[in-house]
Amino acid sequence: MWQDPPEKPELPASIPVFPLPNVVFFPGTVIPLHIFEPRYLRMIKDVLAGDGILALALLREGWEDQATPPMHGIACAGRLLEVAQLPEGRFNVRLAGLGRVRLEEIGGDMPYRSAQVQLLPEVLPDDQSALTMAARRDLLGAYGLLVSEVTGRQSLGLEGAQAAPFHALVNTLCAHLDMPPRIKQELLEVDDVMKRGLAVTDVLRQELERLSKRKKGGGSSGGGSSDGSPTVH
Image (tube, rainbow, N blue to C red):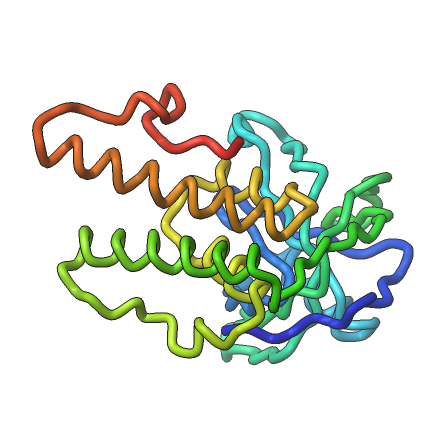
């Protein structure tokens, strides 16, 4: 689901941070979360009592072995859209992405961490330019081929994709494609949405090449990383 973020969201100087090991959040996307740890239950209550804003950040590799696991420095701030408290005290929430932020000074005086943040602008292309229209065709074409290769279906499953703003299409695909969190984090850190879109298209094409070679018995693609997954350049 897409919810167009404000052009320049107003963020407080310091916001709570919810670190996750395998989720990367993008501006404009809406993500459901199930909150059950006591410290994060406290966080949601505090956010509800305040301005409704928190950030989602990806934990760095090796987080399992550290008492205070490090997070990537670029995250996405979001506003709570819906909060449902469950009978056992847990929460189901939906968070709408407001904008990318740099986590600057991270504090831990509460049960959860918070950070002073700097809003990072998205560099948006002109949707009517020939370059953007070509990038949209390439992105949807690569995605359609991958859907067909994996599922055998011709439907893209992206109703309204042709009419959606290019940045909405790019960020929605970044959020929902089955890619390693490392790749998604690299995409989140790209300031220019056109470059991010071209990178997503490249990732899709690398995956198509890998699947094609596997079908032919040729092994994995040589263009990927050492763990066999595509790399964003």
